[in-house]
Length: 283
Image 1 (cartoon, helix red, strand yellow):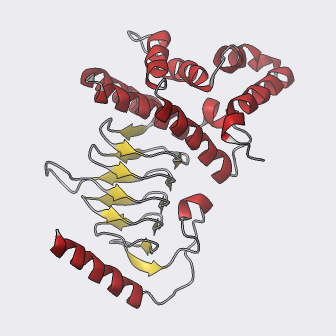
Image 2 (cartoon, rainbow, N blue to C red; image 1 turned 60 degrees about the vertical axis):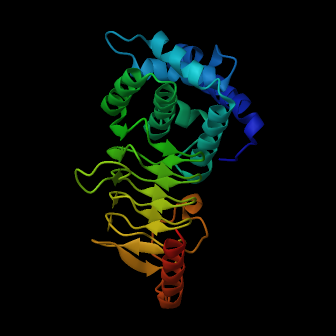
Image 3 (tube, rainbow, N blue to C red; image 1 turned 30 degrees about the horizontal axis):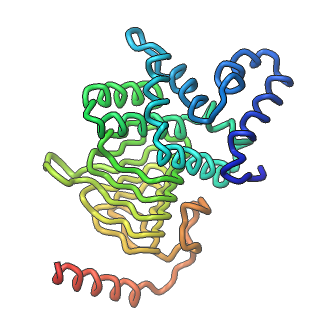
């Protein structure tokens, strides 16, 4: 698909929905209720999340109202658009901007997490916890509301993703299904990973403990990461070890799952370890 600029995203979604409603009459009422009757992207998102997350004692309109309230924050609206752009430009299965909004549960779960995070920040902890549980039930994605996640994020497929309470994820991040950003046991306090900008994590990888994964790193599918990962290095295995350099500065933007050819890592890793030691001594 051909990307559009940020300020054109909502108009493009409306065009796609109008086209699909015309071509598939069975979807006309569905698309009208979720997109065509609304005047903004946050309003349409609120309708989508309300329809997805409504339960016996919490209505679709109540969920929608919470979503509208959260995304009245301009920062959250910018994150919403950046996340849409991430999916549209990185996922070859994406046929348009309306597809993630309507159908991609990784995108929907991420936006619902943003609502829960906003609720937690405003002191509504019990409601944030309720929403976390409902997101897990509906999307099979369990993100603690206290986790901090940047913008330009893509969760591809997303089934069985788990992100702990003290995890931090920087901008322009991509990962696939069955990824865990978790702790190593029953320790308290700051116990979850810190993921740098542009990182890509392959399917089934587990990153455990309060460790730093540097900017532009790549983690191979099925790996178990227990130690810090230097910037712009590919790690793989159980436990994960450096195996090469990514071909791109920010692997998340390219979504290349293959390992790059072996290259000499010794000098780069020695330099990174020396800089890390120096920083630790200064602290």
